[in-house]
Image (cartoon, rainbow, N blue to C red; front, side, top):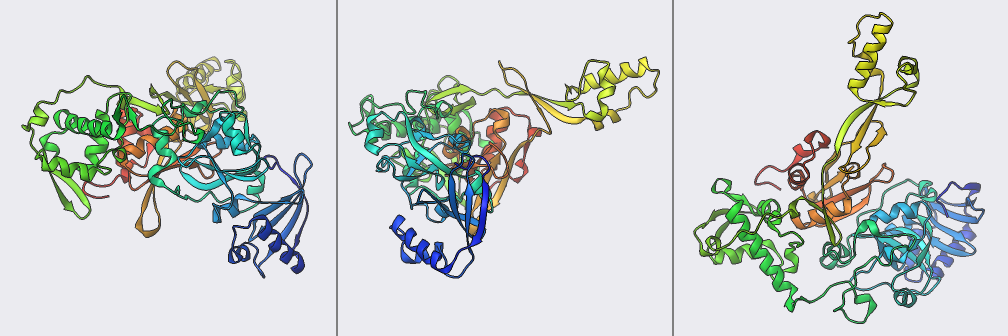
Length: 538
């Protein structure tokens, strides 16, 4: 509804009687809000305005603003909360979950189709057709859209999750949101972070993120589990065993295999003492066989420290806390029978893949070239060589054209490089097997920053991955496993159609290994690696 600009008819301060009536209407419309919460939303004395406007399709809408932000809007006598209000009350409406990549389509005016809905472990929220709903993204409970259910939950499940799920009215980043302070969604963790949808995504049970179709053209957004129960909510979520062996037992075996593989072929005596986090992130994960994913939380140990305690009891390694809260491996018995008898499997390509749901494909870094774009004030200089305003050229082409021009016109200083400085920057990115992509402007590097949150907690934020062909959701899934830390994928502030990855803690060291060593991206296209933690520090 607010995907395009609207026309404001009037903007006036609310009257006292209308304020009381609005408070009563909110209490009826949203009965889960307590009296104090309603009073906080509709304050008694603070400024509260009523904005009458016409949406781009002609709908008459009344918007209530408080503190400069739209908090409610009324359409055909029905009240709806804005995303600003939902960020303070994330559980006000039943929320459906979708992938961050879908948000761009919702902002553009699309409705949420059921193939793009992620089914959480607790099942879909129970709604009836016409009920007011919120839409949130995987890994963050902060709603990013408001809409109306196009069918009941029972009908959604009966359809096999096909067709339209929610008719979207308002989204984060639309023009109604822009009329406020344009703040970004807060990071609100899932109610059960140990069993979040992100972990289900790690198992690859929701299919390729890029294949989720908003128009419902794809048959399904999930991979059904033939051994799951008949309850449609429980299908495609998890299974207790594979080939008759419990998943927990299989994960224990995989954990020990990666541990022994790392000690036998990757860790050297000179590496000791070795941080346990480095052992896991830099060595054990890269030893994981292709097609499998190591997840300690799904093992019987649950934590790396408990697993290493068990290995220490077997006298394979010796673990000590060299600094407060930081454990390191200080000794390894390479003559231990468990290590000497371990047979290293054939090299796997798993460490050089980008994981996209249940499918993996090799990642090959693009070929990147700096280009120069012909501006209007230099068009005449390049016309003779057949290049118009806006043409993109490599530096060598510019030098050749200028040299030829100078020779034809008997000019001096044919090698003068000032011309390059006057051209507009551009760049060309070529992925293997694809046509070159040429864009004007400067190439933004992958930006890694360390943000200090409350209580001295740090968060690593990564931006601009898409420019280099990297899926932020896939990178987040890899980091979640390697760092054993929670991750959130959200829209990047101030950047259109771009996502950022947030990882708990200082994980710049892991990012450097992933981007430089495994994806083989040149270091000049990555900024922020110098902020990696020093050995022995977090």
